[in-house]
Image (cartoon, rainbow, N blue to C red; front, side, top):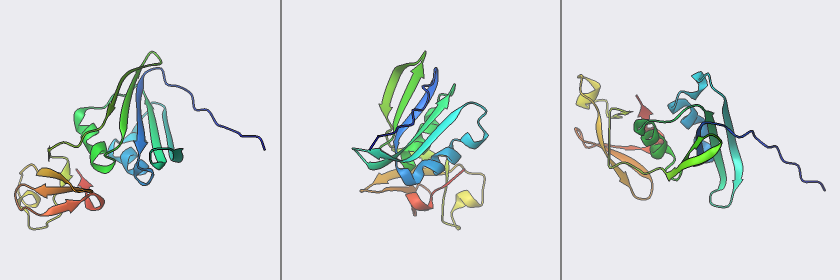
Length: 151
């Protein structure tokens, strides 16, 4: 039997997000607004991975992500790796890190929380044991990864 492979073009400049949890690839695409990106975007899901079993990957040409965007990736896929490419060469490769706090990027799921009624920026402590959870600074309610609604 002949093994067939599909090779995806390398990007000259841009970012590769590797080792995304397969079930979270489309969520990461939405969080980063990549459906509106006018540059080339490659996406793969359920790819074989020795580390994860199955993984997702996203390649975005001519785009580099801000720390706030990388924090969003970390919240939904804490084992992801960010690879920056310049002139077809890897210039930086970092594993995402969960921040200790996130402000203004996730909505509090408690309908009675002050952040849902007043013009106050949300503020959460990040808890991981073993799954990612956020604890609201104001009402102290927890939000799980599955229930996170990004602003």
